[in-house]
Image 1: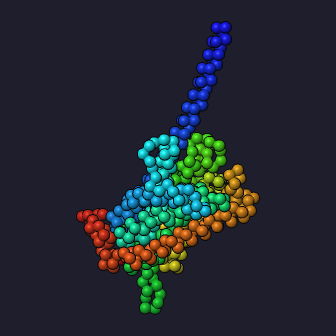
Image 2: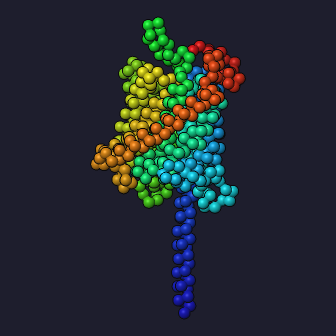
Image 3: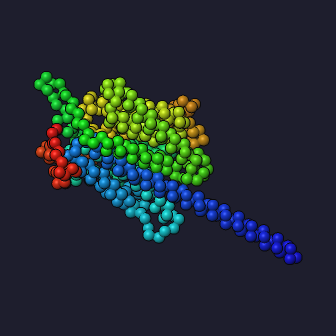
Length: 452
C-alpha cells in the first residue's frame, strides 16, 4: 500500500513539474516576444536621429537648427496625437474595412494582460507613425514655417497615416483583399512620400533653385549639402534601425507556428534587408558614376536607403537572391527619379525624399507580386507561379493608399497655406531659418555664408 502511495505521489509531482515547466516555457516565450518587440521599437526610434542627420547634412548650414528641431518635435507631437487619436483610427473596432472607431485616448492604468498587450503594441506602432511624418520634413526643408510644420505633422500622425494603415494592418479592406506589405513600403514610406510630394509642390522651390534666362531656358541650380559626413552617419543609423523596422515586424521572437509571423523569420528578414541595402548602394554608385562621370556621394547614400525602402514590403517573402535584384533595381531607380523630379518636373526636393520613399516604396510593394515566394502564407508572385493575382492586389493597394495620402495631404497643405501660411518670407529664407525662425545658429562663432 505504501509503495502505491509513493508511486502515486511521484507521478503527481512529475505531472505538476511538467505543467509548471510548460507554463514557465510559455511565459518565457511571451516575455521574449515582448522584449524583442521593444528592442525593435527602440531601433526604429533611433531612425529619428538618422533622419535628422541625413536631412541636416544634405541641406545648407543656415537651416541646420531648424531641421534638427523639426525632427525632434515631429516625434514629440506625433506621439501624443497618435496616442489620443491615431491608434484608435488604425487599430480600433473596424467600420466597413475603412476606419477604426474606438480605443481613442487609450491606456488604462491597471496593468493586466489585455492592457499590457496594448502598451507593447502601441510603443512599437508609434515609432512607425513618427517615421511616416518625418519623411515630409526633408522634401519641404529650408523654406517651411515651423508652426505650419507642427500643424501638418500632427495631422499626418493622427489621421492620414492611421486610416490607410488600418486598411492594411488594422484588419481593413486591403488586408481582407490579400494585399501584402510586411513592414511598410506602402503603409509608412509611400504615405510619407506622397505627403512630401504634395507639400513640395504647394510650397514651391527654394529661391534661386530654378532660374529662367532671357531665352526662356530654365537653369537648375544645385544646392550642395553642407555636411556629407552627417548625411553618411545618418544613413548608417537608418540602416541600423531598419533591422528593428523590418525584423521586429515579425511580432515574435519565439518559433511560434512558423511562416512569416514566426521568430524564425527574423533571420530571413535581416538577411534580405542587408543584401537589398548593400545592392542599392552599389547600383546607385555605379550608375551615378557612369552618368555623372564621378562617384556621387549623395546618390550612393540615397541608393542604400532606396534598397531598404524597396525591401521593406517583401523582406519576409523573398529569397536572398531576389532581395539583391530588388536592391539593384531600387538603386538605379532612385537616381533616375531624383533627376526626373528635379530637372523635368521642377519639383524641389532637397534630400530626395520623394524618390527614396514614394517611388521606391511603390517599387518595393510591387516586388511582392513579382518575387514573392511564400505559398504557405498566401503570397506567391509572378515569377514563382502565382500569376498576376498577387501583383494585382499590390497594384490596387498602391493606388488606393497613394490616392488617399496624396489627395488628403494636398487639401491639408492648401488649407494651411490659406489660413496660417506655409512658407517663410523671401527675406527669412535668404537669412536662413535658424535665425529667422529660432534666433539660434547651429554653428555659432563660425562664418555662415547665406548665398543662394
